[in-house]
Length: 285
Ligand SMILES: Cc1cc2nc3c(=O)[nH]c(=O)nc-3n(C[C@H](O)[C@H](O)[C@H](O)COP(=O)(O)OP(=O)(O)OC[C@H]3O[C@@H](n4cnc5c(N)ncnc54)[C@H](O)[C@@H]3O)c2cc1C
Image (cartoon, rainbow, N blue to C red; front, side, top):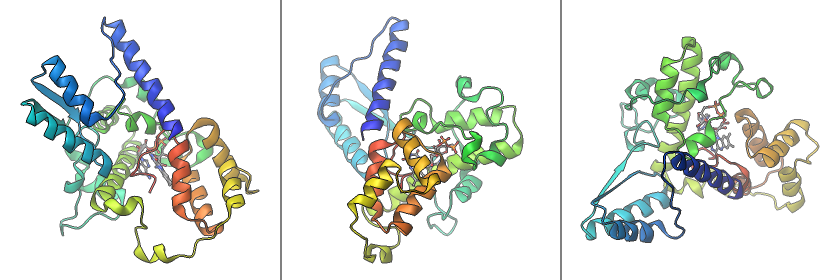
């Protein structure tokens, strides 16, 4: 979406500036990754290519195509699980079933985060986690981390955040709450991995039979924050102006769209995809 592209553009410029400070520069190529990466590897005579793998259906298809191309040219291809704490297919209960909540993921898999910490202390200024467990769920409190776009675009990995949080000078309660939120992120990706068509179908099949209303005016009012319901409108206007919205308000506006306006959730999903700077195909569903 547009907001997501805007954030990515800023992230690329920031990375380029950081590289230039060290005497390097970033080369940005536009086109299909499955064509460009193998072609670039050939030109550079690279013996190996390394990247963090993706887990959404489209991303997986691209990763597979890149690997196949590289290998056919004799270039080694290595992808790594940097975007998540755990590979989605390992997120299962003892009975080998998918989990039902993010907290369960955190409780079962939490302590097995792999990577070593690096310096991301700017995300954890001294008192960042203060009040997190009591206030994270209150939109007016501004207690949540606002790390979602940084995670989305790989400025930080969840493993870095995990270790930084573990080492932070914060109460066990605040740490637990923050780490459990990372558990929800893992949970969302495991669901998308498990049920690839959750992108277009309802999680519960019976909901696909719901007779959604057609109401372009209602949809427009929702999108532009003019429904007349102050909490919904405040959230939708915040989204439009900043590209971000608090978790609880995302729930409120999504619920309002589906249960009050009776509009198809896919219409809301498309709007979120265009306007959220942190939009990812797993968490939105
Ligand atoms: C309808 C709806 C749409 C959403 N769409 C997105 C989206 O496109 N991208 C996105 O990153 N999150 C999405 N979320 C999840 C959540 O609302 C945001 O991750 C969170 O509000 C971001 O703010 P924060 O970084 O301050 O999070 P915090 O509350 O501080 O949480 C820390 C991190 O944990 C993860 N996290 C927290 N809650 C969730 C959750 N419910 N599901 C998955 N991960 C979570 C995020 O990576 C977040 O940055 C959505 C939630 C709902 C209800």
